Structure formats: structure tokens, C-alpha cells
Image (cartoon, rainbow, N blue to C red; front, side, top):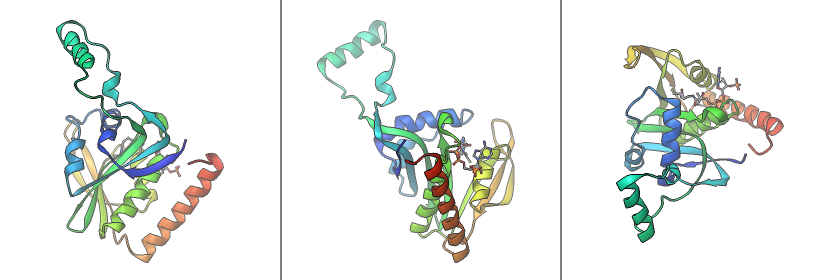
Length: 211
Ligand SMILES: CC(C)(COP(=O)(O)OP(=O)(O)OC[C@H]1O[C@@H](n2cnc3c(N)ncnc32)[C@H](O)[C@@H]1OP(=O)(O)O)[C@@H](O)C(=O)NCCC(=O)NCCS
């Protein structure tokens, strides 16, 4: 696979919404990504495959029967309603909100079938780099107490627990763990980040030359 990180675009939304649904099945309704793309505080990126294009999921919907099927067949016959544009294949995505010098990571998720291949790490690195570029002082986030994969990813990148929100998640009253990475532009954080980036690229050049 050829991993590329870039800003999220409108045509990515159907795939991103699917990844969201798979990764956060208990959160309903899901984030409105269309609105997020229009939100000046929000910044979203995707990890995608430059070489693989996919049609938007709606275009693959099962054919409808009866009256609505007739309408949709008539629409396509008459050429009304152009098909949603194709997008590059999306492995995962991440987003942050920038408010008062603080970058708050809203989301980070990878298709289950593509996990444990360094994609979550690539997304987190891109979020940290983006926060620095946006001149944020620190990065914060909330994570479920039981989410060991995500907590371990954040800990690897220097995030530490700074608080607990008791019963924060409404579906099961699970605690939310507040984590933060302060002074992101400091020499210490930057040196640690460089080391991790280097270790990651060495690991990937051995395991998967194109990552
Ligand atoms: C969290 C998530 C994004 C990690 O993505 P990923 O691509 O699998 O992660 P990576 O392969 O880049 O792993 C990087 C690090 O994360 C941690 N990690 C990832 N999966 C892990 C697991 N199952 N158990 C323990 N640690 C794990 C490790 O520290 C790992 O570093 P290592 O390879 O040196 O051990 C992914 O599990 C996911 O999408 N989960 C569902 C959505 C979610 O919970 N998001 C977080 C919301 S706060």
C-alpha cells in the first residue's frame, strides 16, 4: 500500500463515515463531517492510498424495488443527480479543533482490517505536526478508560493523564480519561517526536517498504 496523508475532502466523507460507524458503533448520531469541513476551527486529515480509487458507497447501494426504484431508474435514465465523485481509498482519519491556543483531538480511527500497521501512529504524528503548525501550545483529548489501544498509542507519543471525567460516555457510563501533551513546540517534545518518527520509518522500511 502507498500511504499518503492529506486534508479531508468532501468526496472522502462517505468512507470516513463508514470508518466512524465501524469504530464508534455506540456513538449516535455520528459526527456531521460535512459540517466539520465547513467549520473553521476544525481540521481533518485522512490516510489514503494514492493509487486506489473507490466509488462513493452510495453508488453501490442495492437497487430499490417498487415506486422508489422506478423513480431512481427514471432519474438515472434522464441523467439527473450526478453520481458522487470517486475518492482515493481511505485507511483512516483524524481530526482536531483549535481553540484558544489548544488543539483538541476529536477523533482518530482506522478501519479494523488495517489496524496494527502503523497507520494510527502516522495519523497521530500528522495531528501533532498540524497542531505545531497552527501554533497550538498543547494538545488535549478524551479517551474511554477501556480503550487500551488508543491509550497506549497516546502514551507512546508522550501524552499523560491529566484528569478523569466520571461516567462521561453516556452509552455505558464509562469514565473518560483526559490526556494532554503540553508545550508541544518545546525542544524536549520535539526531540522525542523526531526519535519516534525515525524509529517508525525504520520499522516500516523493513516491514513494508512503501509505507
Ligand atoms: C487507536 C487506533 C487509531 C490505533 O490505530 P492503529 O493503526 O492500529 O495503530 P498503530 O498500528 O499505528 O499502533 C501504534 C501504537 O498504538 C498502540 N496500539 C495500537 N493498537 C494496540 C492494541 N491493540 N493494543 C495495545 N496497543 C496498541 C501501540 O502503542 C502501538 O505502538 P507499537 O506498534 O510500538 O506497539 C485504532 O485502534 C482504532 O481505530 N481504534 C478505534 C477507534 C478509537 O478507539 N479511536 C480512539 C478514540 S480516542
